[in-house]
Amino acid sequence: SQQGEEDPQALSIQEGENATMNCSYKTSINNLQWYRQNSGRGLVHLILIRSNEREKHSGRLRVTLDTSKKSSSLLITASRAADTASYFCAPSGYSTLTFGKGTMLLVSP
Amino acid sequence: DVKVTQSSRYLVKRTGEKVFLECVQDMDHENMFWYRQDPGLGLRLIYFSYDVKMKEKGDIPEGYSVSREKKERFSLILESASTNQTSMYLCASSFRRGYGYTFGSGTRLTVV
Image 1: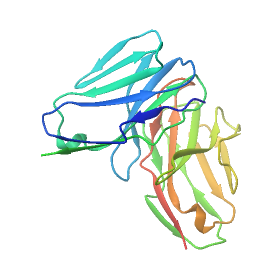
Image 2: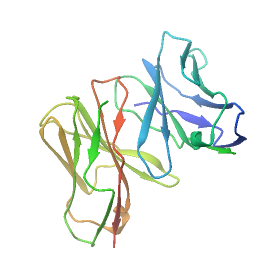
Image 3: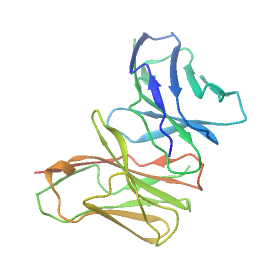
Image 4: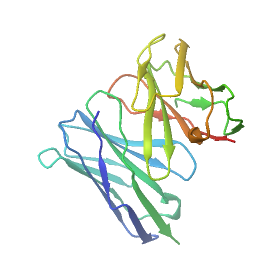
């Protein structure tokens, strides 16, 4: 299984600002998934982007994928305090998912 | 929506006890997984199952076993709990390989 590495490790912004998180991985993939984890809870699946897609939107989330650079980014627009959480990327090659240490996002009111 | 239910949110057990962590999913998913999450180490895969009665070792299976007698239920067993098994345990399921995972809320286990 592949592991993604999220960057930055921590991000602090104000409400209303945009938040961008990046993910790098090392091997070829079939899709890449992003998850959110609120403190002390389970992970929540946010979005899946297939290897033949370059961009995908879901509400205030925008994900891009560049398979040539083996990287992905997650953009959260107009952040809210409720977006405060850790965010994980998970490159998938049809085996089990391996999660990195995530990006901890803090959105201040 | 698919729901993954873990039987306990918090659990305190004594060293040497046999501990059962139960996980049930309600949407006929084929695959189920057990992870543990520790500060600084992230999520690590303990065991997983791609079908009923099947089980596969993950990255850190030592000290654990699993049981999947029915498709919807995947149990994690700590044969003899030790303090280094104090952790947050997360169960997940997915429809098929390559699909997104649905996680339970987690069980925070403390072994004293």
